[in-house]
Image (cartoon, rainbow over all chains, first blue to last red; front, side, top):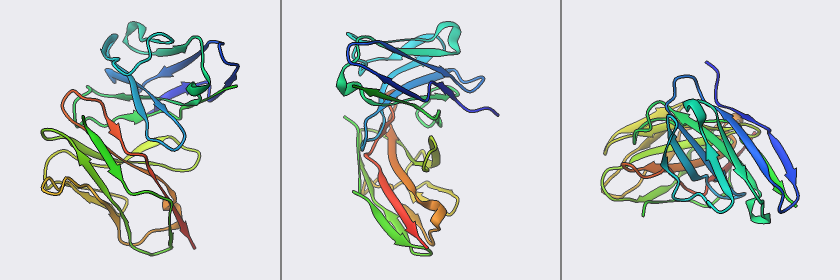
Length: 115
Length: 111
């Protein structure tokens, strides 16, 4: 079974530029998550989708971050404009139904460096 | 809100030593508890989980027991190997709240 796919794996941009990340979840998984992991910390949820609807985006900095999951499968996360403090690994995860005990499967992540 | 506190690293052990990584949590209700592991160069993967009090999760020789009375979910392994070198994250999820992670504990096992 194929895992969660993410691209690109690495991205370096200047501050104030824009960047987009792509995620393809495990086939059949209704729930998709985007996390931000800053060096030395655990991942922090940015947004959760159930199919193509947003369940939780309370920690998403909406002035600069946006995400969509069209057709309930692939998802993109965009940052515009980027700031230095956005340097982090962006992780995508998926799970079957989003329940409390549901296992989340993580992709390899995209390491973003903002100069 | 929900939170997880796990022991600071790095932890360095010799091969075949006993491992304990402490994890305590704060949450309302009855959260589910998880240990995730990140091997060098790889993504996060679930190591084990427990969804109710007194449950024991186990995988690859690792174990953790959900202790509601002490709000703990300590990770243990009787004999570590070099291949266990990784970063270990304790996490919890309660109801409709997000999965909340600890800061991670880096384990290095030397031969």
